[in-house]
Image (cartoon, rainbow, N blue to C red):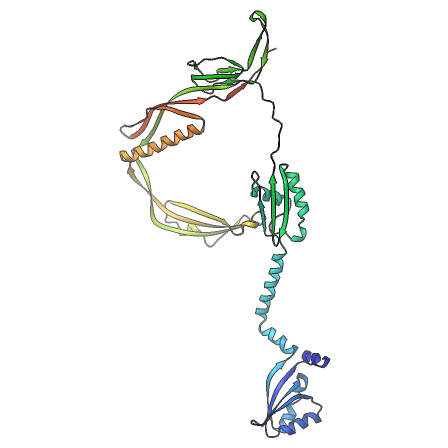
Length: 403
């Protein structure tokens, strides 16, 4: 066994020797102390096969010349030839080595943080908080402590009743369950319910406080509708004191306004000429790189739109290692004179009117009557009319006690 190992380290050759004096060749090798083993005879070609050490092979030159045989190396075995093979294929083995090195490096780091079970807190806010505390995608696993993460999140988010942090491969799984925190209600400030616009009272229902107006009365912005001051009377309706409360009730106010939206008949219309240029841009840590300067290729464009698409090359590690790619599309435009037809103008003005009513409804207004219509002047179309809204009043004013 030891002989084989030493032979492999020094190098072994499997050789074929051809010639009429092969027997003499073997005897000469023996006389010169050259060891041959694994001998076999090829009677057809009058040759022999044998194994010989690399060191002894270089001593065969004189013997080969004397015995007039032809020596051919059939196979090379051993460490010296393995090193030679590595040298010839160094790029392949270097690539394999680098691949395993990269795999080991990547597998030793965290590349994803997943949060599940939450309803109020978003995954983005939790990941951003962990990033500030030094827990981020790309960090080494050796620096991670699941127990430390649990304590960190519990301390930050008081409404988390149960939390689990688990490391699986290169991913951190955070599972949480939120609980509803019972918070002490802040004492309401004592105040009057007042009108937030001019209008007419449609109805009033008082639950707490003193009503100052009745249905059908016109009020101005800031007038008190329900007072937070309650008079306390004794026998004979004699005023004995005052109590201050937070006025509560339902007051519906009717508000009226004149609506007008104008649209010019003639306008400048934007058209694309068909000429365009696409530009690629990369952003590494707030430093921008271009393939070329886009303005040098757009000097003939008088006006153009820029459509920009942006994406993160690696979203998981973007907080620590921001790398972005951009695609900019420059499209040449020109403006030509155009005009609205009556049907087109009516459609546009109606859409604007519907958007306006939608915004009013989102603000708490209820439309009860409208008389809007399309009209035309010399240079424009316009939508105009009278609108009537009902709105519940919810504006308060703090009570300032005297004396």
